[in-house]
Length: 115
Image 1 (tube, rainbow, N blue to C red):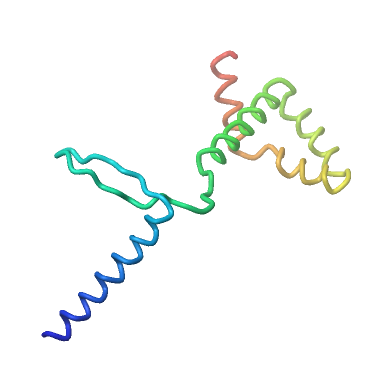
Image 2 (image 1 turned 90 degrees about the vertical axis):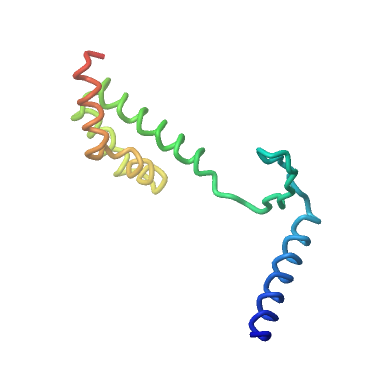
């Protein structure tokens, strides 16, 4: 039993030391609902911008839907096909701008509103 307690103590001391070292690089202080001030280590390092990536993809989708509505699906497809026959950069653009099922469905839904 005493040995198990020593292992738990070592784990706890290691956690405390890791948190102390992290807080030496910066801390964020917050106040609990009962007034207790809690210090947490500041997150460091690169984080993936999920929100920015989502908004970029949503903007691209809206742009593609708008082009399909304005040009029509067949004309839009012809323009994308012309891009697909070009340079490697143009082929990459054609791959991105290809009208998939979601784009065509969204364009159909927007057209049904009479826009």
